[in-house]
Length: 219
Image (cartoon, rainbow, N blue to C red; front, top):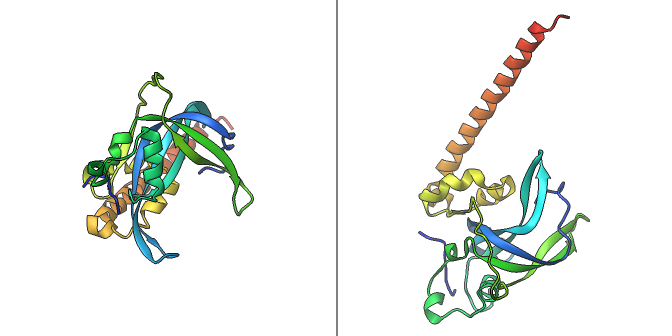
């Protein structure tokens, strides 16, 4: 199954300043079917992540692109936020045929303009949010991004990309109620067991190296 939509952060990183930025979609992540306890609904959720062009951040001495994300209900209903944003991004409204099924993979590696604003969270921390999305100015050419990917809870061929997903987003995915139906729960269990095993071996290797170094010291 594709991520078809139909008509029916790290606190140590300083927030981006408000303004209009150019971005390119690098990750399309299906969060699965989530329980909306406030409205008593079950809705398929998803997330789009953009690289902010020309903006980088240094993490562990590695220069990485700044990114920003937005979570959506995966619906193209008339009043849905996803439909509004996609139409503004594309610069045209959806045709009747497209409303019957639009695959989100079509926006992967597609550039746009992002209007960013800052808001204060309940914890007093300042967050940068996407206020609106716009199509690129006519004639502007943007180089395609590298390392783009799609993760679809219904498509086992994309599950290998689970390892590339940020931990806080993984936690959202693990709350999805369709994990058992798709058997993604088994994949995640095996993945976490393997990661734990690998981390244990790394700790053991570090300890052995430290012990050997101590033996070589002349005091």
